[in-house]
Amino acid sequence: MENEHLTIGEMCRTFDVTPRTLRFYEAKELLFPMREGQKRLFSRRDRARLKLILRGKRFGFSLEEIRQLLDMYELDDQGTAQLQRVYELAVERRDAMIEQRDELTEAIEDLTEQLRWGSEVLKDRGVARAAE
Image (cartoon, rainbow, N blue to C red):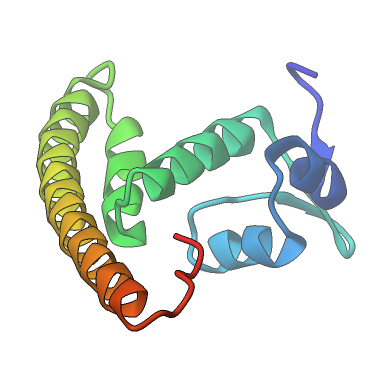
């Protein structure tokens, strides 16, 4: 599979994405499949780019940030600029995710307290408690 070109269906199965997703990334000029008539053929480079796109999306990077990182990879500095920028963005994203987690943890704790209160009120009124 190293040098093979994959069809859109093979890419979808390999990366668990839809054809629409691949066409979207192609339209956004993040992927550059070869064309054989109506058939799209994805190279090893496209597969590597898609893997990075999906990883970036999973970490919450915007498509524009992902594009910039992919474009930096094309520079002839052995990926140093890209690695530095990825590192900076990753630190920022991790910090934002920690903040979101902390906010979510606090909201869960508040909601849990409200559920305890509601359960006690219902119990005092003789109503069977709902599932928690």
